[in-house]
Image (cartoon, rainbow, N blue to C red; front, side, top):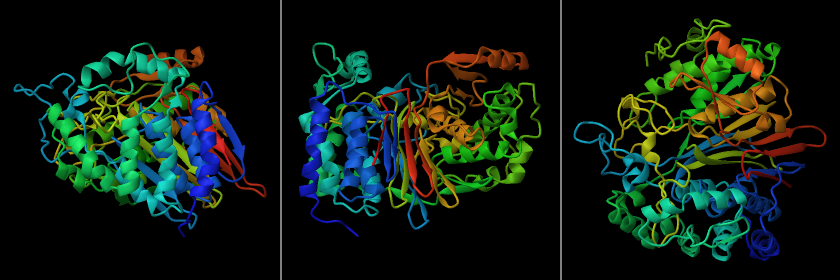
Length: 565
């Protein structure tokens, strides 16, 4: 039932958001929340606050998700967006599971070899930095596909974002550093001044005002989806394409549709795990990984033991080999999903696993079937039992760095997620084949892995992360940390992680891994590569008891924030 006339109540909490945004040097970041009704965990405290505000107005998790997503488009321009796309996985209070696919699509004028030169070699950076790099944005369509599950009206849900864009907000130290580092890119790639550039360097506490973005949000508020995919905003997008030899057209925008898809759901011991289906490969990879270790008694091996790490690395090697060979948009290619997820197939995949000896990606091939890192995530639970896991992206940090003149939002560079040449790695090192080749209207393969875990048919974990190709492995490790090693949520999120993706044949590890374990893995034959942090897990754990406890955790690796209600 839609709640009416929320504006008077909205006015009561908006001043606190404005105060939080402008009068404090930087909004206070809370890394953990403990509450009894609900929680919002996102990449920025102001976006989390906008979501919590919808709970206070009588809204549910879907209201909070819409308000949070709109707010992220303003306060987290590195990945929050109107110009990108994403995926939602949700568990409804009535027990139904749903997912919404609003992945970007290739424009009608796109074609298979559009990023190759006359010698069939990739043109440097064409799939990353040009206007051709942008797929048709899906985020706004995804929000409107979500709206039917919400209680509040669109005007209420979008108002915090409009105020944050119009009045401004204080940027964090991390954001100041990013904007300073990207200043030359924003100047180079844009033909008109953009809000992200100023003469002197940005510093923490500076106010970022985005009037053109505010105007775009107002058009969405007043005209609905047509306020983005048609009318002045569509003209701004098409004009921007013409200015940079891009190919997104009025028809591309008007014809874009978000899609509800069946979720991927599987049992892992006493748990039910809900994930995203294709064109996200994330749900498939997470399911393969969990099922390949299910009968190996990993708990007895111990957390971060060499034995446990080796088992998980070898499962990752096999899952990513399959991803490279078989997966693409199900609207265009036949994917052997049933086979890839069958118990028999996954058991067969692990037959050549040898404890204590490194596998080899030259000899480990895709199975025999018959059939960014700059992204952002938010996790939400409400008091009614609606749980939502949403991952959205521009692909690279700040997308292709091109701001739509007059509209104020950054374009994605998701076309690089296609296999622009068979066997050639994309920006994340992921290889692909013809199943993920460019084609008009096609959705590029993704690694995004929004995930919900049920326990006794009730939400237990709501989790997701950015991180490009590292997304599924970060989710995998977080689930194993909690479900197998009984780790506290904060430790499961913040402890150092590792990653393997078949090719290149290396194990990447974050700082903080015990040297003893790395020495043991090296002795087994693994190549270890230390690296900076990857991913930022947004986790909610719900403890169902006489006094329901909701624990939200924002990752230490960024400005991530957990708010409870």
